[in-house]
Length: 267
Image (cartoon, rainbow, N blue to C red; front, top):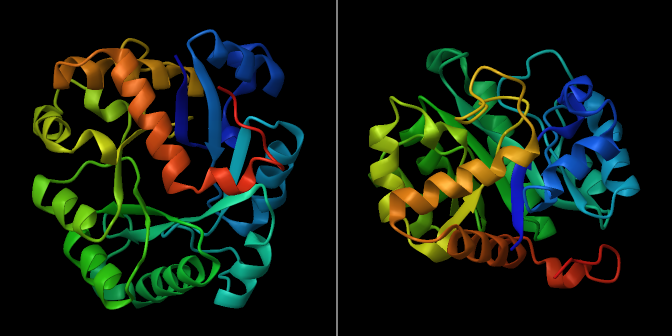
Protein backbone atom coordinates (compact mmCIF):
# COMPACT_ATOMS: atom_id res chain seq x y z
CA UNK A 1 0.00 0.00 0.00
CA UNK A 2 1.22 3.49 -0.88
CA UNK A 3 -0.20 6.83 0.26
CA UNK A 4 0.80 10.21 -1.18
CA UNK A 5 0.66 13.44 0.80
CA UNK A 6 -0.63 15.67 -1.97
CA UNK A 7 -0.04 18.91 -0.07
CA UNK A 8 2.52 19.65 2.62
CA UNK A 9 5.00 22.38 3.47
CA UNK A 10 8.14 20.41 4.23
CA UNK A 11 10.22 23.58 4.45
CA UNK A 12 8.09 24.69 7.43
CA UNK A 13 7.71 21.45 9.40
CA UNK A 14 9.34 21.38 12.85
CA UNK A 15 11.99 18.78 12.13
CA UNK A 16 13.04 18.64 15.78
CA UNK A 17 9.75 16.88 16.53
CA UNK A 18 10.51 14.15 13.99
CA UNK A 19 14.12 13.13 14.44
CA UNK A 20 15.80 16.41 13.58
CA UNK A 21 16.31 16.03 9.83
CA UNK A 22 14.39 15.88 6.58
CA UNK A 23 15.64 12.34 6.14
CA UNK A 24 14.18 11.25 9.49
CA UNK A 25 10.90 13.06 8.75
CA UNK A 26 10.48 11.24 5.43
CA UNK A 27 11.58 7.92 6.93
CA UNK A 28 8.96 8.30 9.64
CA UNK A 29 6.29 8.92 7.00
CA UNK A 30 7.27 5.75 5.17
CA UNK A 31 6.63 3.68 8.32
CA UNK A 32 2.97 4.64 7.80
CA UNK A 33 3.05 3.89 4.04
CA UNK A 34 3.29 7.58 3.06
CA UNK A 35 5.82 7.26 0.26
CA UNK A 36 5.62 10.45 -1.84
CA UNK A 37 5.05 14.13 -1.13
CA UNK A 38 4.14 17.37 -2.86
CA UNK A 39 5.95 20.22 -1.10
CA UNK A 40 3.91 23.33 -1.82
CA UNK A 41 5.33 26.82 -2.25
CA UNK A 42 3.51 29.80 -0.71
CA UNK A 43 5.94 32.64 -1.43
CA UNK A 44 8.81 33.25 -3.79
CA UNK A 45 11.15 34.27 -0.98
CA UNK A 46 11.27 30.58 0.05
CA UNK A 47 10.87 29.00 -3.38
CA UNK A 48 14.55 28.02 -3.54
CA UNK A 49 14.16 26.12 -0.26
CA UNK A 50 11.12 24.24 -1.58
CA UNK A 51 12.84 23.39 -4.85
CA UNK A 52 16.02 22.26 -3.08
CA UNK A 53 14.07 19.71 -1.03
CA UNK A 54 12.58 18.23 -4.20
CA UNK A 55 15.94 18.22 -5.96
CA UNK A 56 17.57 16.34 -3.07
CA UNK A 57 14.79 13.82 -2.40
CA UNK A 58 13.40 11.85 -5.38
CA UNK A 59 10.17 11.08 -3.52
CA UNK A 60 9.38 14.79 -3.15
CA UNK A 61 7.80 17.00 -5.81
CA UNK A 62 7.35 20.76 -5.61
CA UNK A 63 5.15 23.62 -6.78
CA UNK A 64 5.62 27.32 -7.42
CA UNK A 65 3.19 30.05 -6.47
CA UNK A 66 2.19 32.77 -4.01
CA UNK A 67 -0.52 32.17 -1.42
CA UNK A 68 -3.46 34.61 -1.41
CA UNK A 69 -2.62 35.72 2.14
CA UNK A 70 0.98 36.66 1.34
CA UNK A 71 1.03 40.46 1.39
CA UNK A 72 4.62 41.63 1.60
CA UNK A 73 6.64 39.44 -0.73
CA UNK A 74 7.15 39.35 -4.48
CA UNK A 75 3.98 39.17 -6.58
CA UNK A 76 5.00 37.33 -9.77
CA UNK A 77 3.93 37.94 -13.32
CA UNK A 78 2.68 35.10 -15.50
CA UNK A 79 6.07 35.07 -17.23
CA UNK A 80 7.94 34.78 -13.93
CA UNK A 81 5.77 31.87 -12.82
CA UNK A 82 6.34 30.12 -16.13
CA UNK A 83 10.10 30.56 -15.86
CA UNK A 84 10.20 29.14 -12.33
CA UNK A 85 7.88 26.28 -13.28
CA UNK A 86 10.18 25.16 -16.09
CA UNK A 87 11.80 22.42 -14.03
CA UNK A 88 10.98 18.70 -13.88
CA UNK A 89 10.74 18.90 -10.09
CA UNK A 90 7.93 21.47 -10.32
CA UNK A 91 4.67 19.70 -11.08
CA UNK A 92 2.10 22.33 -10.05
CA UNK A 93 1.27 26.03 -9.91
CA UNK A 94 0.27 27.34 -6.51
CA UNK A 95 -0.86 27.40 -3.97
CA UNK A 96 -3.08 30.21 -5.13
CA UNK A 97 -6.71 31.26 -4.79
CA UNK A 98 -8.82 33.57 -2.66
CA UNK A 99 -9.06 34.09 1.09
CA UNK A 100 -11.63 36.52 2.44
CA UNK A 101 -11.11 35.35 6.02
CA UNK A 102 -7.77 37.15 6.34
CA UNK A 103 -8.39 39.82 3.68
CA UNK A 104 -11.67 41.72 3.29
CA UNK A 105 -13.39 41.00 -0.03
CA UNK A 106 -13.85 44.71 -0.85
CA UNK A 107 -10.11 45.27 -0.61
CA UNK A 108 -9.00 42.13 -2.39
CA UNK A 109 -8.80 43.18 -6.03
CA UNK A 110 -5.06 42.44 -5.92
CA UNK A 111 -5.82 38.95 -4.63
CA UNK A 112 -8.23 38.22 -7.47
CA UNK A 113 -5.71 39.52 -10.02
CA UNK A 114 -2.99 37.32 -8.52
CA UNK A 115 -5.33 34.34 -8.81
CA UNK A 116 -5.99 35.10 -12.48
CA UNK A 117 -2.26 35.25 -13.22
CA UNK A 118 -1.71 31.88 -11.61
CA UNK A 119 -4.54 30.38 -13.68
CA UNK A 120 -2.91 31.75 -16.83
CA UNK A 121 0.44 30.26 -15.82
CA UNK A 122 -1.19 26.90 -15.14
CA UNK A 123 -3.02 26.86 -18.46
CA UNK A 124 0.06 27.90 -20.41
CA UNK A 125 2.45 25.51 -18.68
CA UNK A 126 0.05 22.58 -18.59
CA UNK A 127 0.87 22.12 -14.90
CA UNK A 128 -2.17 21.76 -12.63
CA UNK A 129 -3.21 24.37 -10.08
CA UNK A 130 -3.36 24.04 -6.31
CA UNK A 131 -6.26 26.20 -5.14
CA UNK A 132 -6.86 27.59 -1.66
CA UNK A 133 -10.29 29.05 -0.96
CA UNK A 134 -11.64 30.35 2.34
CA UNK A 135 -14.82 32.37 2.77
CA UNK A 136 -14.63 33.02 -0.98
CA UNK A 137 -16.26 30.04 -2.66
CA UNK A 138 -18.49 31.97 -5.08
CA UNK A 139 -15.73 34.24 -6.36
CA UNK A 140 -13.27 31.35 -6.53
CA UNK A 141 -15.53 29.29 -8.79
CA UNK A 142 -16.53 32.37 -10.83
CA UNK A 143 -12.91 33.27 -11.59
CA UNK A 144 -12.05 29.66 -12.41
CA UNK A 145 -14.87 29.72 -14.95
CA UNK A 146 -14.02 33.16 -16.35
CA UNK A 147 -10.34 32.31 -16.82
CA UNK A 148 -11.12 28.79 -18.08
CA UNK A 149 -8.98 27.06 -15.48
CA UNK A 150 -8.10 23.72 -17.00
CA UNK A 151 -7.05 21.38 -14.21
CA UNK A 152 -5.98 21.19 -10.61
CA UNK A 153 -7.08 20.47 -7.07
CA UNK A 154 -9.13 22.24 -4.44
CA UNK A 155 -6.74 21.67 -1.58
CA UNK A 156 -7.67 21.25 2.09
CA UNK A 157 -11.30 21.29 1.07
CA UNK A 158 -13.71 22.57 3.73
CA UNK A 159 -16.61 23.94 1.69
CA UNK A 160 -20.04 22.53 0.81
CA UNK A 161 -21.13 19.94 -1.73
CA UNK A 162 -22.26 22.58 -4.24
CA UNK A 163 -18.75 24.05 -4.32
CA UNK A 164 -17.16 20.62 -4.65
CA UNK A 165 -19.49 19.74 -7.51
CA UNK A 166 -18.83 23.04 -9.29
CA UNK A 167 -15.08 22.46 -9.06
CA UNK A 168 -15.39 18.88 -10.29
CA UNK A 169 -17.55 20.05 -13.18
CA UNK A 170 -14.53 22.13 -14.22
CA UNK A 171 -12.33 19.04 -14.08
CA UNK A 172 -10.80 19.63 -10.65
CA UNK A 173 -10.02 17.15 -7.89
CA UNK A 174 -10.98 17.53 -4.22
CA UNK A 175 -8.31 17.04 -1.55
CA UNK A 176 -9.19 16.26 2.05
CA UNK A 177 -6.94 17.07 4.99
CA UNK A 178 -6.93 16.33 8.71
CA UNK A 179 -10.00 18.54 9.04
CA UNK A 180 -12.15 15.48 8.21
CA UNK A 181 -11.02 13.92 11.50
CA UNK A 182 -12.10 16.91 13.60
CA UNK A 183 -15.07 16.51 15.91
CA UNK A 184 -16.97 19.51 14.47
CA UNK A 185 -16.48 18.55 10.80
CA UNK A 186 -19.62 16.48 10.28
CA UNK A 187 -20.77 18.59 7.32
CA UNK A 188 -17.43 18.07 5.60
CA UNK A 189 -17.63 14.33 6.21
CA UNK A 190 -20.96 14.33 4.38
CA UNK A 191 -19.23 15.95 1.41
CA UNK A 192 -16.44 13.39 1.61
CA UNK A 193 -19.00 10.60 1.23
CA UNK A 194 -20.29 12.08 -2.03
CA UNK A 195 -17.12 12.90 -3.94
CA UNK A 196 -16.43 10.15 -6.51
CA UNK A 197 -13.49 7.93 -5.66
CA UNK A 198 -11.70 8.94 -8.85
CA UNK A 199 -11.66 12.63 -7.80
CA UNK A 200 -10.28 12.35 -4.25
CA UNK A 201 -6.82 13.25 -2.97
CA UNK A 202 -5.54 13.21 0.62
CA UNK A 203 -3.08 15.57 2.32
CA UNK A 204 -1.84 16.88 5.64
CA UNK A 205 -1.15 20.56 4.85
CA UNK A 206 1.55 20.03 7.48
CA UNK A 207 2.75 21.66 9.62
CA UNK A 208 -0.85 22.85 9.98
CA UNK A 209 -4.11 21.03 10.82
CA UNK A 210 -2.77 17.98 12.61
CA UNK A 211 -5.36 15.18 12.39
CA UNK A 212 -6.79 13.09 15.20
CA UNK A 213 -5.21 11.18 16.99
CA UNK A 214 -2.37 13.73 17.14
CA UNK A 215 -4.51 16.88 17.21
CA UNK A 216 -2.69 19.63 19.11
CA UNK A 217 0.77 18.19 18.39
CA UNK A 218 3.20 18.96 15.54
CA UNK A 219 1.97 17.73 12.16
CA UNK A 220 3.92 15.53 9.77
CA UNK A 221 3.30 14.13 6.28
CA UNK A 222 3.25 10.73 8.00
CA UNK A 223 -0.19 11.58 9.31
CA UNK A 224 -1.69 11.44 5.83
CA UNK A 225 -2.25 7.84 6.90
CA UNK A 226 -4.85 8.98 9.43
CA UNK A 227 -6.59 11.15 6.84
CA UNK A 228 -6.81 8.15 4.51
CA UNK A 229 -7.97 5.96 7.39
CA UNK A 230 -10.76 8.42 8.25
CA UNK A 231 -11.80 8.72 4.61
CA UNK A 232 -12.10 4.94 4.47
CA UNK A 233 -14.26 4.95 7.60
CA UNK A 234 -16.48 7.76 6.29
CA UNK A 235 -17.02 6.07 2.94
CA UNK A 236 -17.29 2.47 4.15
CA UNK A 237 -14.22 1.44 2.17
CA UNK A 238 -10.87 -0.08 3.07
CA UNK A 239 -7.83 2.09 3.62
CA UNK A 240 -6.18 0.13 0.79
CA UNK A 241 -8.95 1.29 -1.55
CA UNK A 242 -8.44 4.91 -0.53
CA UNK A 243 -4.66 4.60 -0.79
CA UNK A 244 -4.75 3.01 -4.23
CA UNK A 245 -7.34 5.43 -5.60
CA UNK A 246 -5.69 8.59 -4.28
CA UNK A 247 -2.26 7.47 -5.50
CA UNK A 248 -3.69 6.81 -8.96
CA UNK A 249 -5.53 10.15 -8.91
CA UNK A 250 -2.37 12.03 -7.91
CA UNK A 251 -0.32 10.46 -10.67
CA UNK A 252 -3.08 11.13 -13.19
CA UNK A 253 -3.66 14.76 -12.21
CA UNK A 254 0.00 15.72 -12.10
CA UNK A 255 0.97 13.86 -15.30
CA UNK A 256 3.71 12.02 -13.51
CA UNK A 257 4.12 9.56 -16.36
CA UNK A 258 5.83 12.47 -18.12
CA UNK A 259 8.36 12.77 -15.27
CA UNK A 260 9.30 9.12 -14.81
CA UNK A 261 12.82 9.54 -16.14
CA UNK A 262 13.56 12.56 -13.95
CA UNK A 263 11.68 11.45 -10.83
CA UNK A 264 11.09 7.66 -10.75
CA UNK A 265 7.85 6.67 -9.06
CA UNK A 266 7.73 3.90 -6.52
CA UNK A 267 5.45 0.92 -7.10
